[in-house]
Amino acid sequence: MNEWNIQSRAHVCEACAQPFADRQPYHTLLLDEPPALRRSDICEPCWQKTFAGDARSRAGFISHWQGVYEAPAPVVDAIQKETAETVLRKLIEQNDPRYAPAAFILAVMLERKRILKVKEQIIRDGQRVFIYEQPKTGDIFTIADPNLHLDQLEQVQRDVAALLEQGLNPPPQPATTEQNSAPVENETVPQPIEQAATN
Ligand SMILES: [Zn+2]
Image 1 (cartoon, rainbow, N blue to C red):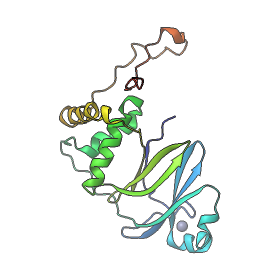
Image 2 (cartoon, rainbow, N blue to C red; image 1 turned 60 degrees about the vertical axis):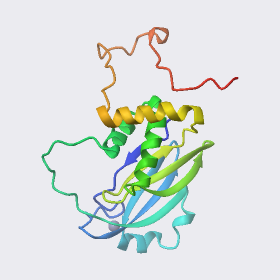
Image 3 (tube, rainbow, N blue to C red; image 1 turned 30 degrees about the vertical axis):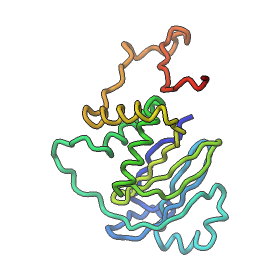
């Protein structure tokens, strides 16, 4: 099961559906609603009316924080250079477990550069999961700790360097879109990055 995803900040209050205005304070609730984590963005008046003082007793409560809504910047029509953040977003969108170690390292890099902030660390299904926020956009990145071993680090660092240099190549697409009935034993299963632990 993959524990990484991005959840964007809502543009309207979940409770009253009013659009957020630029610079308006809001509240984010992070809730465990198996199988996923869900964020809920609430305007201040609704928060006071409904949740204030009572957020922690909500079913599945994981975290609560306050933010200030920033209206999205106008789309700039420029060639987007690959950055650690754009590569990380693409990795998460692709959701390919082979890239889990690289995604984790990129998130750590971005945290050191103060582009991402750790909001919460939780244990889910026995795995450590980091909840990062990109404060400018309010996006939440959920990244599972892949428990890297020292002997994996060098390879992962090479992978990250290559991703930053060349970007993420699109994964090979199936020749046809109608492969749902293909027998399982004929599919090629990609091997996860894994080191032999026995020695
Ligand atoms: Zn509201």
